[in-house]
Image (cartoon, rainbow, N blue to C red; front, side):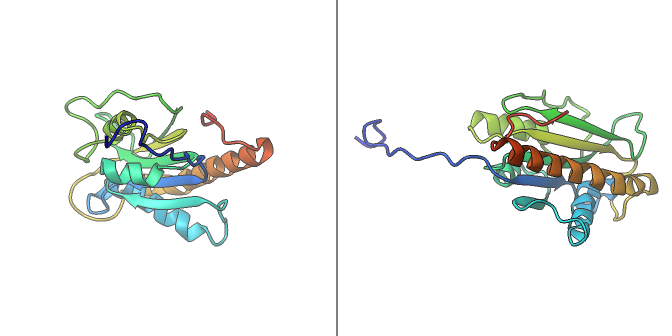
Length: 190
């Protein structure tokens, strides 16, 4: 009978490999374009500061399906996004590490994102369908302006070079640890 356990084929699971660096945002909402600007800067720096092979740099609007597709199969995922807390200090950067299986709480009403569904909701959905990321590092940079328009505010733009260095260091540290130990770590270094 179709779908019966006796007729299903065993499909080997590919081991996780490589790194995804995903910039979430909307370049037409001022500081909400931070994630995309970070990816653009990393791409521009790639010639002088090459990242380890297997590192994918991607821009995403935050759609859960697209996020899942970008991190699927990766041994490490870094997500970069702007956040807009009530008492923001534009340019202040937060780094958050999540081990596989750990789930954040979805944002409450009055959330600090311009995306319809946020990263927390994408992670919950991915976990429920068995397509969550491996170790995850989130960089959230506080923004000042999410109105319509292009270009980052000066404080957020000034945070980009250090943010790029921190992301590059995380990617290289993960790659070195993987080569040294011969296996992918289960959780990111804090």
